[in-house]
Figure 1 (tube, rainbow, N blue to C red):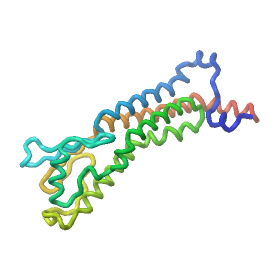
Figure 2 (figure 1 turned 90 degrees about the horizontal axis):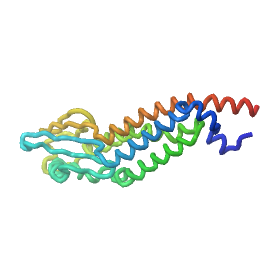
Figure 3 (figure 1 turned 30 degrees about the vertical axis):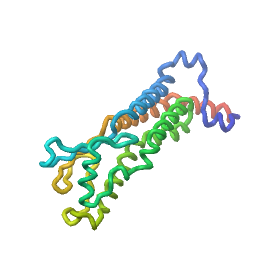
Length: 220
């Protein structure tokens, strides 16, 4: 009778079986490796961009969000936001930016562990990573909504603009500014990793479900 740990880890594959069906058993781990590399690369590239277009700024203003910091024309945008009563950008998502790198490293470790698990429990390690791009965009939207809907009524130009929610993807208007938001390379890498993780789950199931069935049959 397999122990609880054996039940979690799943059946081991005999060396002869690995050599005979190397592609079948190697594909899930190879896909998980690709996903891990993509996540690691995403740490060093932007996750999100926003461009603000207005006549008084011929070169426009740009805001770039990395996993752990903001870059671009942050000070200039903050000075504009001050007049309409919006809080400084760096006050948004402070916890997310503080923990962002560590969370991504934990995700990489999750995928490393998942490559050693040959049972359905691997899904629990893969699922948080798979959902990360959607969670990132939802969190970004909530912060943009919170900042845009809670303007300081005592700001100098508070009466010049209604509360707003800038789109996190695509184009929109904020007062006289046109905004263009698009995903950065980091977000596209993490989204690509999610697609690869879906494929890895398919091949994982195809490779190890028959072994799980065989082990249950032999134990009964």
